[in-house]
Image (cartoon, rainbow, N blue to C red; front, side, top):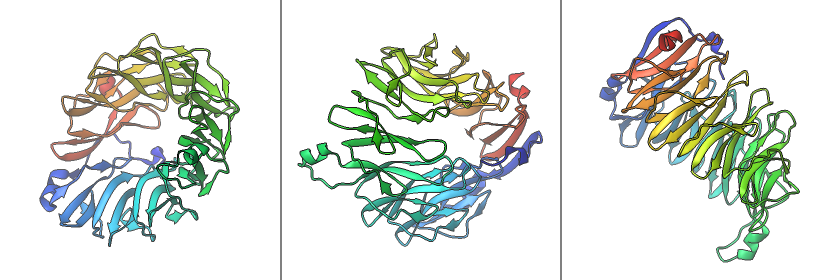
Length: 421
């Protein structure tokens, strides 16, 4: 991620580009993407049949491609896209394609700082991953559920290591799937493997695995827990102990386990999306204390308020003392902080962000097909055609808002008090 202290935090409005002008220059303009510092806006544009470019602040990339998709800014501000030339695919970064050409690419993954990029690759009907354009040495007949380590130096994916036909039930039950890390599969195979996670150091991978038709557990670097369960969900790592932590089903209810041992006493109808606080001392999860009611639990203590349809997007504050989440009742979305709900409801809310000093919480929201920003339960006066996630200044007293109004993309820097009062 770019150092936000180097960004322009002078209060004011900076006009960047008028998207209406683009529509007159190209056959069509696809959905735009705004850079993390707000200084750039980009979109895939069509010139003619089979001719596409990327337009950045009104200026197109030099190269014309047959197809372009998945336009994204990386955390360090580089603009990436999957592009096709002569029927082959590669990744272009700020307009410069990788040297390698592949049959197909999908699902790019970025390291935390954005400097390393991994991607799923299909080549000659075999599958692998590429890191910064370099393919794994080994390919596989099937591959799903990819991951990249936080520092971006390692990649992992669920792979099929043994071929089997539709009728080879016995062979399937013996285990034909594993996890490949940097292209090297674990020695042990499983009936199925699903979601996985790297530890912060990048030297461990934990994955939810199925060891028989009826038994599930977590495997760390290919070694399953000694305990099995009727079902498990996606694991994470405890940043303090280094253990793998996952939701597990016990006697018809859900709880949390670390390295196979139960660590929460509470039993829930459902439990998932567990998350540690930045200091590693608090553990939160989305839970259903009873059927059809959802809330968040922190250190096995559920909030008293519940939602009907779902709770998602748990977010700890930087000081680890506060927790925010999104909840949904019917069509209405709400933001909840430490168990208290903001007064307004919305048609949609995106994952909230805390200020660096943990005192403010902001979120992108939608109401009546218009988008704006809500801070500490107060709504920004402007209603826009598009906005992106808000960004706090390093001191937490200002907010950078990237927004499109009447086709004009502007970069706003405002005092937080302009919204909160």
